[in-house]
Image 1 (cartoon, rainbow, N blue to C red):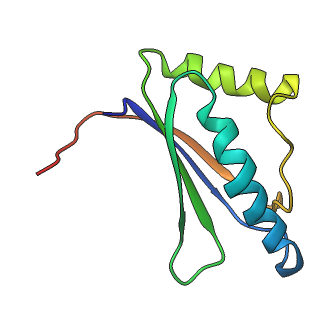
Image 2 (tube, rainbow, N blue to C red):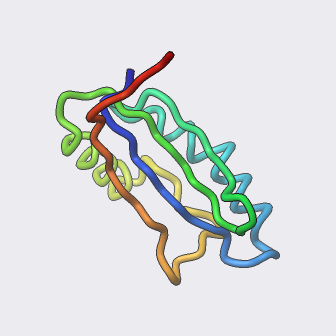
Length: 105
């Protein structure tokens, strides 16, 4: 079971760049994220009725801040590819969530 979730809400810069945005996210970025220490799964969801998308990265780690730091280092060092077609105004919403309870019936 994950100990945390990295939540990212973003959207393509424009309709013209939407295909490149989805291609980068699904065929490059998700795999890069899953190579990071602590990230064990990734998935994307579409917000119903909006042109906005959610990426959820499941994290299994004792130190969630260390996973966040590892992501920052991977980005700065070039291990992560730069975003393609990503809207930056407003910037994506990024939240690191710590698991406090769960139930699977």
